[in-house]
Length: 116
Image (cartoon, rainbow, N blue to C red; front, side, top):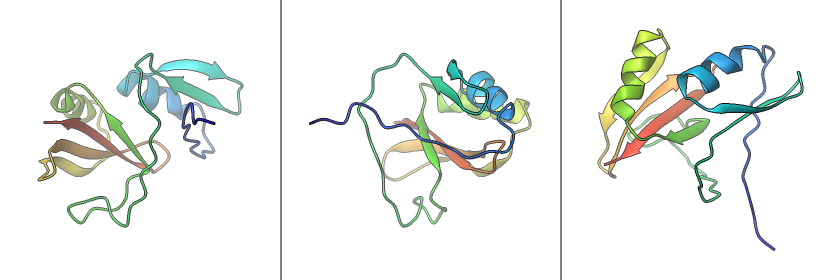
């Protein structure tokens, strides 16, 4: 027995809003669209992970998702250009990540991070 993938399912009343954030901002490809569900993906290989937390670190709330990116500073600039809601400003954390939180169109806090 083996876990092959972990898939998040975020509820929304406005599925069309997903493409601008998860496709255009994060750069994920729309790989499935049934009208009632859209799935965005990357061809990057990664290990399945599930984090369980009492807080988000540094006293922040637990984010709905954490997305590791290659250049967190570029994503922060892009989020500003798009007028996205930054809920935790770009910070170098003591555990070795540089990150910020941005709110997706559905109200979820998304942790965008790079390892230092």
